[in-house]
Each structure stands twice: as structure tokens, then as C-alpha cells.
Length: 404
Image 1 (spheres, rainbow, N blue to C red):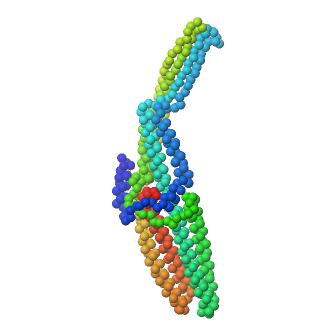
Image 2 (image 1 turned 90 degrees about the vertical axis):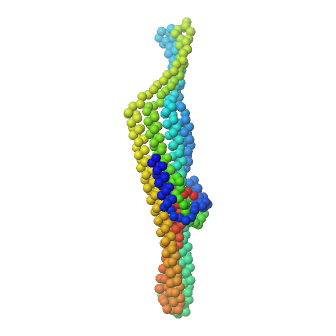
């Protein structure tokens, strides 16, 4: 009931809260491919996939009526070492612990919900890996944009420095202006080197995560209209809670160790002159449950239930917070892009006016270089803001539980 109410409230809040105008279409192939590659390289993913066989073995074991390994016994008695009257007795027994009906059904229910919990954990882990891929992909995009703008800025400075040197040779400008222009070109080259290093770092991290060398140019993801139902995080929390509750039921159904049932065959000869007798018997051993055995198991199961309830409530709160934060970041990034685009237009117009005045001798080189530096900063900000919009799209889909 607790988890059902969480999902019901969650669905209504998610649908009412989201205002994105786009409908989620098919995921981008490069992103889904990258997520698949990262999944294959993840040690945790490999561990969870390997646990599928473990879960299957647990379910098969829970379906067996035998609670442990069968045992075979053999015993012999004779009087050959004392009276030597020909007394012989041989006994062969086979025994095994057997689950009671209530114990067996409880174990089967626990094995089934444990398998469901593992499946939910795998889905949630894939969502987490998708988030890492999204972050690294847009980190590469940001580094690429930074390098592209640095290179573009250097091209403008190279052209300006060539023009300044021609005017210095012609005597229109002082030698100091030529040196200043060359210094700016060298500074731009250093900026390119730094941008290349940052790009190499981000690409190395991406390749470590996915193993892919060809990194596609990311495109903003279409935004989902509503949260994924059920959300992978909430699904995992729900299954963990159900497993804890089923574990408590199993503990209460298994108040004692399973009884042991045995079948024995005995052959007995009382003397040399007598014939042997054979008999068949059944043995049953029923253990008694005690508080020393059951109380620790029951309290541990109750503790797991309380922990899972708290984790489910925390997951609900965090998901709502993450979705709202992602929506605010998307809105802020779009507003920032509008302001950055307007600033680029203004700075470019200002730089063109200063450049024209510089060519006419009405403004100095320092003013032109300052104007170009401001224009360069505006271009960098606009490029990075476009990346921020794409990253905000990815983070909102991530918060909504959308797996590429």
C-alpha cells in the first residue's frame, strides 16, 4: 500500500509538473549504442548479469522438497569378538531434511521476489550508467566547443596581426603595436593548447567509460512528456521492500529447522542355526524452534523492512527534487542561451565599429584587442550555453528515468 500510494502520487505530480512541448521519440542511436557499450564494460553490470544464474539456481532450489543433502548410513553388529554365537545385524538407512508445506511455499515466494529485485536492480543500474554516459558525452561537447572557439579566435588574431604588421612596416603604426598583436597571437595559441588538453582529458574519460573511439556530436534529446512508469529507482525500492516483507514471512513460517525423515532396512541373524530376519523402518526427527534461534532472525527481518521503507520514502523525495531541479536548470539554460546570443550580436557589432575606427586611425590597437577579447568571451559563453541546454535536456530525461 505504501509503495502503491507513492507511485500514484508520483505519476500525478510528474505529469502536472512537466511542461516540455516535445514528445519523446526513438532514442538517438549513438547515445543508445554508447550506453550499451558502457554497460558491457561496467564491472557492476557484469556482476549483476552473473547473478541471474545465481537467482535461477535459488528458484530451482526453493522448488525442491528436500531441505538439505540426503545422507546414507551403514551399521553392523556381531558377536564374533566375544561370544561367537553367530549373531549378525546389518542396518542401511537413507535420510533427508524435508520442508513442510508452509516452509516450502514461503521459500518459493522469497526466491521469486529476490529474482524480481535483481531485475529491478539491473534496470536501475543501467539508468545510472546512462547518466554517466550523458554527462561524459556533453563534457566532450563542451570541450569541443571551447577548442573550436579558441581556434576561431586565433584566426581572427592572425589576420589582425598580419594587418598590424603591414601598417607598422608602412609607418602607420608604432613598433609596439606590432609586438602587442604578436603577443595576443601567442596567447591565443596557448589557449588552444590548453583547450586541446581539456578535450583530450574528456575524450579519454568517455572512451574509458564506453570503449568507443569515435565520439558522435551530441544532439539535444527530445524531452519526455512524463516520468517513466514505473521509475527504475522506485521500482528497485519497491522490490527491495517486498523482498524484506517476504523475508519476514519466511522467517515466521520457518520457526524451526526442517524435520528429517529417514528410511532404514535391517537384516538380523540371531545365531548360526537360525535364519536371518529382515525389517523396514521409518525414522522422523522433529527439531523444536526456540527464541534463541528465531528472535535474532525475526528482528533482523524487521530491521530490513524499516530500512527499505525509509529508502523508498527517500527515493520518492529525491526523485521529485531531481525532476524539479532538472526542469529549473533547463529553463535557466534556455534563458541563458537567449541572453548569450543577444550578447554575441552586440559584441560583434561593437567590434566591427571599433575595427572600422581602427582602420581609419580613430581608435588604438588596445581598444580593438579589448573589444575582440570581449567578443571572444561572448562567443565562448554562447557556445557553452548551447551545450548547457543539451545537457539540461539529458539531465531532465535522466531524472524522469528515460533509458536510451
